[in-house]
Length: 107
Image (cartoon, rainbow, N blue to C red; front, side, top):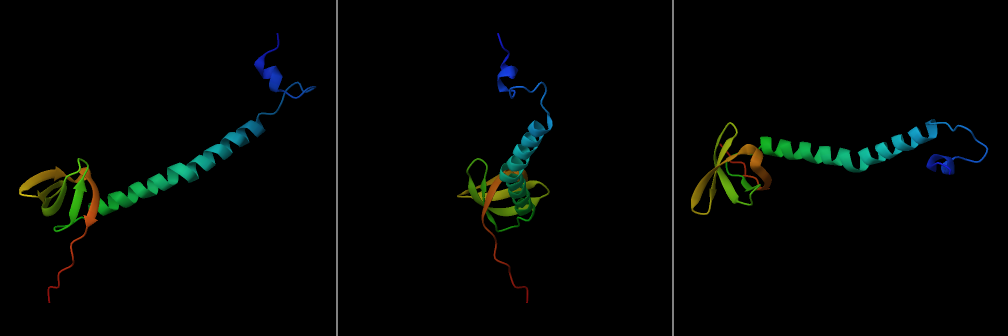
């Protein structure tokens, strides 16, 4: 009975080099990194930057699906007005920013 490894070895070769296999796995990792991991990291960094820069008057959507306008901010707690009620949410629970507040002219 022949082993499974013996079936994949070239005939007449006793031992094959491990370097082609390592090169193949390295190539797969590089492709995986540039197609999946790197774009996801860039998207996460962009989202974190947007969340850090929210301000009073911005309209947001929370992770729970609540749509509201920011009326007060204190550290990581944000108070939003949604419909007739006010809600206090954590800054990290902002899923996306719908619109940003228009800058006001102080002059």
